[in-house]
Length: 112
Length: 122
Image 1 (cartoon, rainbow over the protein chains, first blue to last red):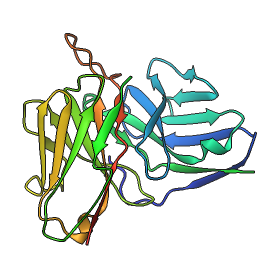
Image 2: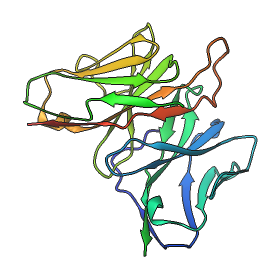
Image 3: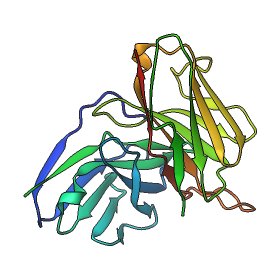
């Protein structure tokens, strides 16, 4: 269902380290998953997506892993940089793909 | 490509007035646009799905008479907050689905988000 009224969990990492942000989804029928990055006062920005027929997809410095057995999605950011500080949301398709259901979000803080 | 704009980016209004927010897809046609609301430190909450040329579909708990949505063209959707009150103060974000014309809908049609509109009702 829709995320409602949850305070954001926070992940703090040292600059240069790898970050792993996790997301659990609820709908076993979901077939498309997306990670978005949202900086303060801005709209979400598309990072990477993955279809349910895949379990891993790589982009530039980012990797998304999908475990359908346990309905778990993760976003790995390599060599985390200060510019990566933001809130990260996972989203899954629901309702025949007409709209996306967003997770509660995770705030990533990169420490110098 | 796939740029979505919103206007205005920030609006302050008096209680009881109406505010219109525009969402435009700048370089693609969007048969479907979505309107979200986001409170501080919270996730996005879908308010309604807007399909070009038809009535919007509202999520449960969203008053359709208060949040009027019009999707008159393939590149423009508007959200009007009528008789705004302080509790309507929020960050309103639209998104548009980039769907190539002439083919069937695919679940992988990605949503692209606008930059958001901050509404402050005094």
